[in-house]
Length: 362
Image (cartoon, rainbow, N blue to C red; front, side):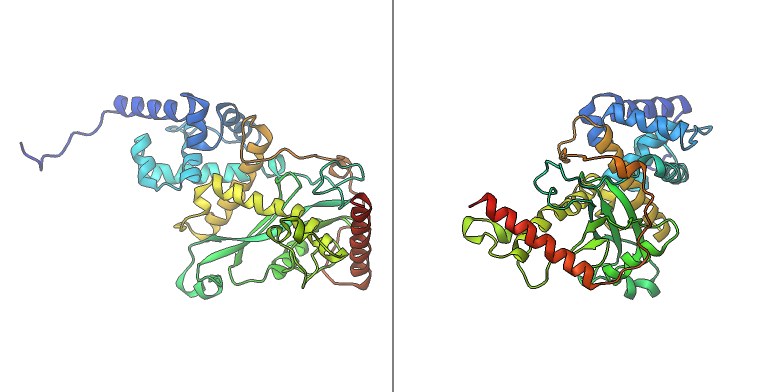
């Protein structure tokens, strides 16, 4: 047998049957397989395709229909597979895979207004023990590092303290763990507070109406609209475990409750990166594409949380009142500045929380 003999080109009909089989196995075989391949059950996948068609204007091309290109796109996000893997799976050229990945990526971003979550403030009758102390709170925010691919000259500024080349991503979520705002693209060496200032200064940036606020960690200033814990006091959840480690003063109790509630953003980031492996590995995409991918993953995260009946990595929490989601006539906070009034308000809140806790446990 001549091993150097060139194999005949796969006939078009055969390629078409292979693609149909690959798509059927990935999407239609069962909800379990569909979740493993795309992180969505079959119903949610169909809803996404419907939104992409009817809201984002995505349409089939001459060679690839909407369902196939969406399946390829989600599989790349979920498993961080290389272009050649999709080529082999769907018998497509590398150019076809790459082009349709970017087509779907831009279409998902056009669903921003449909999928980004509007925050709902905590109300006085909230039943969630983690949040009921924080009336008018909209959620929590934090930064996370996601690896990026940048030119050699830009690497020093994108290098994190751990030596990774990454973007410092600001994520803001509501108390259910749905993202309400995401800002990607800042250098890994940038301070969290600097990124937050940029977010609220942008024309379509993070909006925080006066009278409302987000929980943040001690890396951010304790300023109007952004409630930080007390420095120099115990804070992290593991420090409060056991009866012997109960809080002994108002500042400690405030920090314990603050940590319990603010943990929602850490869980949201954990679920996000757990679902979309592309956010965990080394990036080979240009920075702009990677930043778009980060935002797309957060929008799809919200869709999954909203639509999937089986979703064991997301907890169901009290949504509170929807008043803020529909009417926000108050002025937004324009700058971040620590004031005596805000510090005093935190002190008063901490004292009230601690006194109430002591009374209930007397």
